[in-house]
Amino acid sequence: MDTTTSVTNELRSLLSLIVDSAAIAQRHIPDREKLSQGEPIDSELRSSIFVIEAACAQLCSLIARPSDALANKFFAFYEPACIQVVLTNKIPDILQEYPSGVHISELEKRTGVDAGKLGRVLRLLAAKHLFQEVSADTFANNYLSKYLLSSNPMSSFGLHITDECFKASTNLSDTLNDPALTASASPADASFVKHFKVNGTLFDYYAGSSPEQVKRATQFGVGMIGWGDAIEANAVINEFPWGSLPEGTTICDVGGGVGNISTQLANSYPALRLILQDLPHQLKIAEEEVWPEHAPKAIAENRIEFIPFDFLQEAPKLGCDIYYVKNILHDWADGDCIKILKNVKNAMGTSSRVLVHEFIVRPGYRMPKEEAKFTQAPEPLLPNYGEGRIRQYTLDINMMTMLNSKERTLQDFIDLGETAGLQFVKIWEAGEMGLVEFVTKA
Image (cartoon, rainbow, N blue to C red; front, side):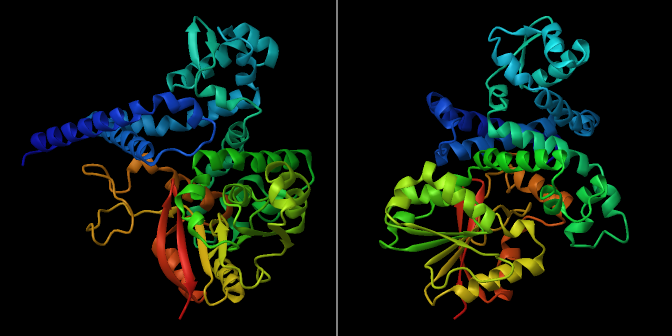
């Protein structure tokens, strides 16, 4: 097959995938507002979104001149730079006061930022479908920018990414090319530490007391709520068969913070008994603020226990049926992950299970269908959905940049479990993330 025929066939296949997936998405347009409020996405719609994003990106790559495509990639860093400008100055909040739009001269009065320069920032973002220019130098919010109001956790997440993460990333190449740092797995050698000249690690920095540290730590904490919505962390509530578990099944949320997932489990599955374990300051907030507001019935019915512990130093409560470990391991190097999993293993009974809930990095090559443990994208898309599921790779690089840690492949998780005395059972797909199930070795 000659090159022209091959490209033509790929082009037709991509267009067909886009049309078919768009027809599926069209059926869900009436649900758009409901979906934007953090409710779980229908699995059919989710798949269609993955395909549309992947196919559109691949189509552009296929037909654009290489120099055009590469130049766009080189300049992509200006988008987060401009987003930081509008978030820092709370531009979405100001625009919300003017549904028909507001002139940049008024924005200058409200922010002190030069009108002409701010207009240019907004124009770039409007060209990226964030904000809209309704008339000359007059801008308004659109569907996307409304979710950047300062009251929305996505705004805090955006500030976290465009501030410390974005700035730290400028040192990534230097760190990787430094012979003294390139092979280090220590969080004290991460690019973040190099850029901000921190004494210690990212978490040491967030524990600091300076106004800048407190501000950034707060942004990070609130921002994680927005990030959880973006990646559908709560898809696990519906996509794992919690409802089929026997009444009284005990679920230990290991290092669960204030209990974002366990509150939802308590409300959705009242037959379960929950144990939330983390450091004392997290549990104080959970017990005194979060659970009384979000799961008061679980407290009243004595279905939740709050037990302080340090997952690096001690085992969680003995003999629970399920130990749920969400977004813990990606913060740590392999040696520490093995410590954490060994501590969990030491608490397990003979019928206990472990559910590790994280991004599971998918391979970029296509596997025979009978060997693949994941759903692979339809051809001619990349089997990992490429741009459609890009966040697993961007987060992996972010973990490298900020903590010298990483997102892991399924084999990585299996190897960690094996070393800790756990046996892999299966993988459950849950939104963009996955659940890796383990039991104790026979």
